[in-house]
Length: 420
Ligand SMILES: Nc1nc2c(ncn2[C@@H]2O[C@H](COP(=O)(O)OP(=O)(O)O[C@H]3O[C@H](CO)[C@@H](O)[C@H](O)[C@@H]3O)[C@@H](O)[C@H]2O)c(=O)[nH]1
Image (tube, rainbow, N blue to C red):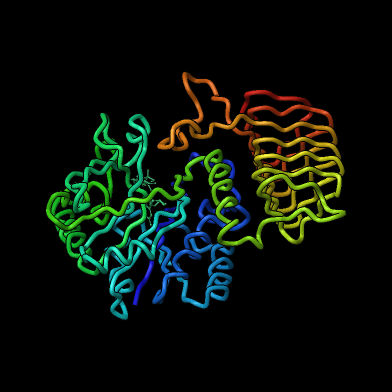
């Protein structure tokens, strides 16, 4: 019997995701037409023997989260429960705090998945590797280029045995091009080292982080407190993948993840991809359209477009590399490129909403999305355009490389600005 835990964080997390996370918790943001963590749940539900999926975080269990849990339970015919931390406990504190619930029923092992990653989640292959040679911790790893590896947990492995010999979380100088994907398979013994960290922290009381922040004694950082501490002791192994993988930290990376998942749908969910049909809009590449959306036949959509529930797309609209969220309206002949249009927003006729993609370098197979800060030297970096919820863009204007906060009614064109 197996279980899975998804670490969904909480409202103080995902700040680079604003203004989109104002309206819906980041783990529920739609990526390729479904909530971000539905991809995780689908992957877990497909592993034979999966008994229960637990979401651990410090969000208040609000209506969207409750509705999502109910729908997921029904769809996958599995218990999908939310366990709320009383305070942010770090990536390992919640696992220790809720250990009894995780171990109830005696699972052979449990998966732990960061919510903010996009992957093809090779969970069955990880399980097979674990069954072949059981160890307390199995980490999913992928490669990154030297510069970008510094933004992740870096793993030095024994190439013959795949044992993790050395682990450094976000090092300041190059350590390894193998990075931690935030997808793990733990055996029940993995909770023992967490208990040791917990007990040590209890003795030491409040702790100061390397960044100078105080964290409570219940906090456990899986990466620094467990992986770094136990590396080289025959307990941690890495399973390398060359499948799709990306972090989802910023809105730009959500758009990139949407492209990766839409590509995956060719294999996993061809029914979710819109096909060109006589009398329907022109479809180029991978496009998802919610069945309730109304799209005019003269619109041209794709590649990498995802249209949410109740969206209206008018005649002559051109949409490319964009996500249009629930209830938005794109009036006739608008052009929306490399952008996210927020819930209930309206883009007026002949307006152009355009952003600049910062996709990974296509010539470097080890490149990932840069999810760095929005600013450099006090200036907004060119990036995708984001319209927050219920924004109104008038007819015939240009909104380029800008972020528009919710409920704004614009009256003119804007370029490279955050409109507060
Ligand atoms: N429940 C809970 N979840 C948390 C908490 N803090 C973070 N998380 C969740 O844990 C995951 C990791 O979050 P971060 O702490 O922001 O770490 P990171 O910068 O994303 O780096 C982690 O992931 C990388 C892969 O995406 C790894 O490379 C890196 O080593 C590390 O594990 C996210 O899904 C986040 O929601 C917490 O206090 N409680």
